Image 1 (cartoon, rainbow, N blue to C red):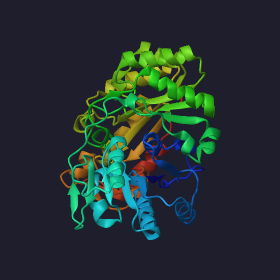
Image 2 (image 1 turned 90 degrees about the vertical axis):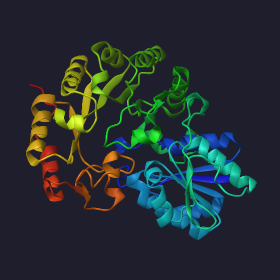
Image 3 (image 1 turned 180 degrees about the vertical axis):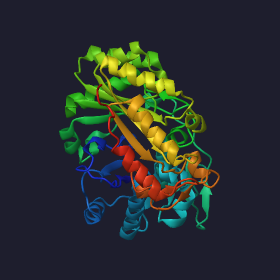
Image 4 (image 1 turned 45 degrees about the vertical axis):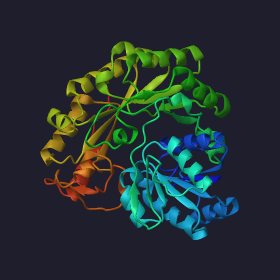
Length: 433
């Protein structure tokens, strides 16, 4: 079948945030799987191309797809829904699929409000293959396909049982970077996102990634991972690698293996990753540094142990303090993420958090995120129970900066905006004594 896979534009552009721009792995993986199965596939990456809807219309008219798949997170969902409408205007017979975190956890509302035929929930590679085989055969009904929600012939919404997650990640082909017309842009940046594992066993109440990828941690083999790194270095001149796992350091022995492989390959790569503070040791950090690691992203979230416990982080303040200290000693920079606007926080609590980061934690960089409960997280699903209320009903604003999209029992949105600005301008973060 002829399939067009799209990622909609984000609220920020390449010029606004070049450090956040990577080839869209969602459609690159899916494109590789579909091509391997014999489908004719194009990838349309609207995140860095500045492609207009008029240009997209021309591209789709020229290609004449039978199926269009749109991958969206909350921040890109509104534009993704508009693209679904454009597709149906061009040809109402085209099957429109949506996937990604936001549609997965807002499947019913997506199908009710927008011209979307099928929502592919959670991991999509195996599910979309089965959907296409079904459509190509002209079979009746979609009731036997696990992992989808859809409108049946009467217009009623059906939610099929979930699909089991892929256990053998090595069975997936490498991402189809060659299908991206935007690849020259990423090649100029020379910075790429690579995912070595899927899933996270933790159940933090603010997170929608763990419910999306599952609570079982699944990994690629070192050989499979290094084949992708070889490809990115040899073909696209990669100089910087960001490992996009939710918890790269979950298994220390495996991290040591990756470090050894990177060191043995003499890639001269600069690389970064996201870690939990309680998984770090000095020998591990030294091995990471020796293999090219220059920076770690640590989700500290709060300077209050009470808050960490209520968030179900299963971590201690002492772990974060020790992790940042050890990173300084071995020469790895730290970017620490902090949450602001938690349901129980008062103004005094937030000011104490700011003081904790500025005077005790002292990372090289801090990212203050205003709480924006996304579909799939416990905070979103139990919004009222937590005393939260949306004051801006626009998924595009779910990016963590002001203006706040919520208010709490204790703080209004304007108060949160002011505190966020104070936190961002707080002096002393990352400065040496």
